[in-house]
Image 1 (tube, rainbow, N blue to C red):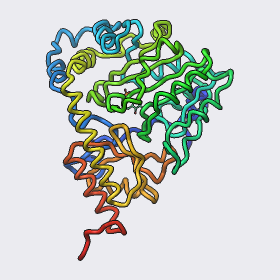
Image 2: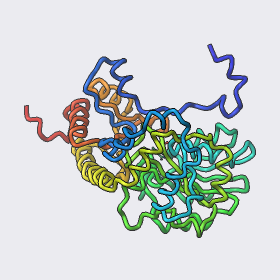
Image 3: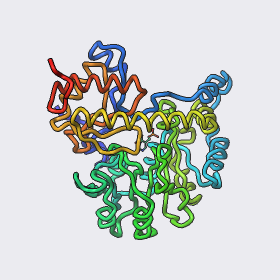
Image 4: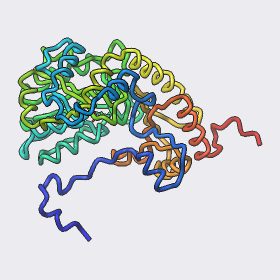
Length: 383
Ligand SMILES: *Cc1c(COP(=O)(O)O)cnc(C)c1O
């Protein structure tokens, strides 16, 4: 029976499909009765938070927890201003960067307006657009087999811009594809975008990038006043459970986002942990180094299993299973390994696999090898 309240919902909300998160460890335990679970489904830092962040969390006193947080986020904005060499007035704090993405949609979109994203871009963009009744336009991704396959096609995105386009979402690097955009094409794209169209460059995975041709778009804010750059503490900083993210933009944009921001959207513990995590350069470096080494090893492992993958710049790899991926996902669950189906992106033959610790990745490769069985590329199985 259909939900009788649906006709009461706002039109954008009535047709909205909710975000599908990675399966939580506790849910798999409950549903399948398995233990010793490896979760490689939500691009979390497998090392967890650093010691400094953990110490800061533990140092939160009873009296700090019973008070509302500093709604203005003074200390964290100061620290982030220093991190990026900018006035703290450029920073907007969010309950995860997801919160900031939603604020941007709420503040700048309405039913008569449009927003553009790429076909296989972060699922939150179309949801944020549709929830406020605006029209989302997905630009076809670069075709499989071509250079940058599955990634953003900036020409196709530019072609969708018209006088109703208020927002463009670009993830660099992108999730779930792991593809990324180089400085020159991205700068050329920004040069074509009209001033009335705001461009959000989502840099959730920026910390993992070391290619000199990767642009930190924060450096371009002066040149492109319609640019908003988002960052998160959920990935390389290892604080996904605390929910902290932020945007960097012209102060005028930040002032408008402030109008729709919930007054206490970043809690006391999250504030303290994020501040400490920013100081923990060692933990960040260790996290990035582990990821780079294990990404290389995992990608080799996939190739050895005869699987194609999209070369990744992030802390996850999009792997092509060559068949409907749902059965493989389920078989991996039964082996206590959680990965991420991406059929909701229209990629029903792919799985997105987050990069874990060495032992977690070994467990994944073993389980995957078992599930796929001996194939053409399995050279070892002599009897
Ligand atoms: C994970 C992710 C985020 C971060 O979400 P939070 O709400 O900050 O946890 C943002 N953008 C992309 C592309 C992501 O993959």
